[in-house]
Amino acid sequence: MILTFHDSTQQHAGRLGAAYYTDKDYEKVAVRLHAEKAPHVADASFDIFVDGVSIFSNRAASYRQTGATVGPLVTSDAEETTILLLKGSSSDDIAENFNTDGIEQGSWLTCELVNSGGGKNFTVQLELEEVSDE
Image (cartoon, rainbow, N blue to C red; front, side, top):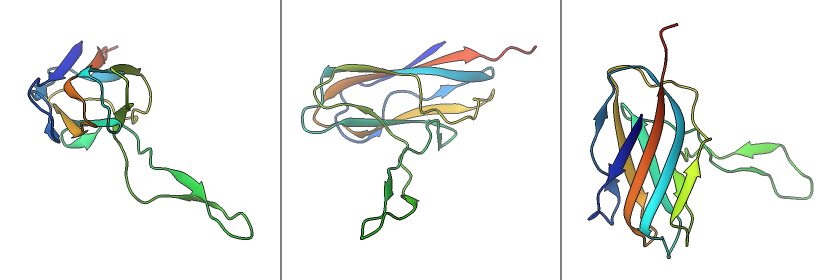
């Protein structure tokens, strides 16, 4: 099943398109991002939520401490779960960075445009696979 989030008039941050109710249990397969006008100011960013929780893993930057010696690996406390359509790009397929949670029957799915990056007429497609009862 493919869910499509689209609103041709939206250019600012906010919910993109309709909310979807799941009638079965699903696993996430891939996300496809498309823009009629590619982002040209910055990367466009999006997030997809199941009952208000992002379906993506935290991708906040990890870094090493600076100084005379190399310190331990330090991870940023800020959560960064957005996916990106890179500046100058009009489409991208993403099949990674999902968290491990499945999508349960009775869940609501929504998509947020976080930053348009100057692009417009975005379509976000979420491909799902039904979980069998076996």
